[in-house]
Length: 333
Image (tube, rainbow, N blue to C red; front, side, top):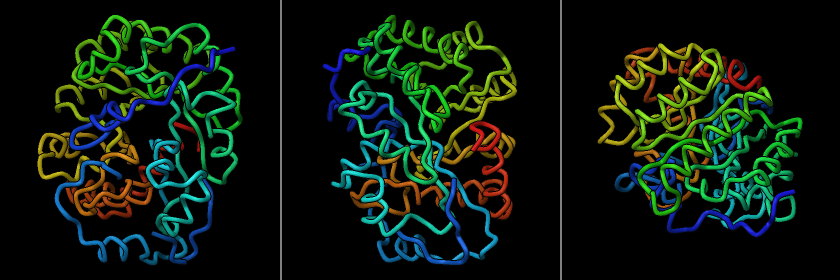
């Protein structure tokens, strides 16, 4: 099995970010019943948010039959670390719950340390209601990718709540961590492994659109389910994914709420609602409305949903309904 000498993502790497426009690696189940349920770190919020308004938003009541949401991309290990808790239940308790619509999340475990059965916390996270997992080797760790790591990822994906291989991809903004060649090798190898395991794929792409398009077209079956996580490219790139890959979904985070997000706003107006997914990339990419230095948690998906509704000029309930269905289609949850 894998050599457990790998380390968690360096703080320098986490803070400069893989999805990182404005602050970070940017890069289920429970009844809602009208109850009030609670309520990123560093995450990219611009300026100071209204703390009381955020608290009211997290504690707002919703009808018993309101449609919920799943945060399709959150780094639970890092979020717990930033929140200074040791477990998912501790996280929920400290945040006083997330939001009444919150149903669950897909936790991302893509650095070598988080994959370790002795060091990683993922088995405890996945034991909680509504929590699912995705496993892979992040491009910034591609220098460490080898057969032993692939074996460990495959072992993790045997868990009944493991729903995808990822996040994997290309990140040309931090080549001091892994060369382009190392990243491309790890990506191609993992695409093949994910297809062999019959698992959907979660893609991370930063400053690498052309290479990413070429690799996916050559190595991933056209009909494969894939989430382009924390989408941050232009409308032409979005059109390519949505046209070339009929089961591709674009994931949007709190970055969509930034004042500088005009390019993403154009993409959201263009993209069909049935091809969008809600995510936070927590603890990174704190929505504009929140501000401050708290970690971004899954409850803040509500700000992404509301921004999508505003851009498309449709009721937010329609966004929740379709994105929840999209999550079922993509991950079976």
